[in-house]
Image 1 (tube, one colour):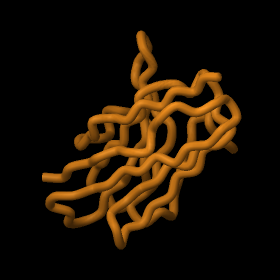
Image 2 (image 1 turned 90 degrees about the vertical axis):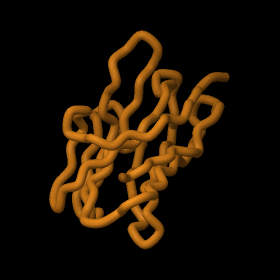
Image 3 (image 1 turned 180 degrees about the vertical axis):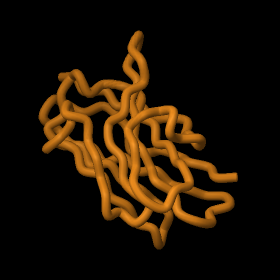
Image 4 (image 1 turned 135 degrees about the vertical axis):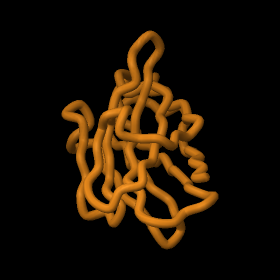
Length: 125
């Protein structure tokens, strides 16, 4: 069973930066793509970014393109989401999710079957 734990959230001013981490533990065999999602109060969970199992493919939502960067350290089973130029509209609970697949990744919630508990990101002055 794969467990995911997000960390790195917090309160930041507009224009600031945060780096979220998604640490995987448990039975880790095979290859896992990782997706990052967020959910603001009263809104549906939306895909933010994803990275393939070896890191060769990434994808971003238009709303975060050129501001967010996803990366992974497979030696330590950690995936990062670097968030720069943060805006109040980025305020949400951020989740990472995993699916066992060799190639590709997706930013749709239905593609993933392992989820973390989420970390709060608040962008406010």
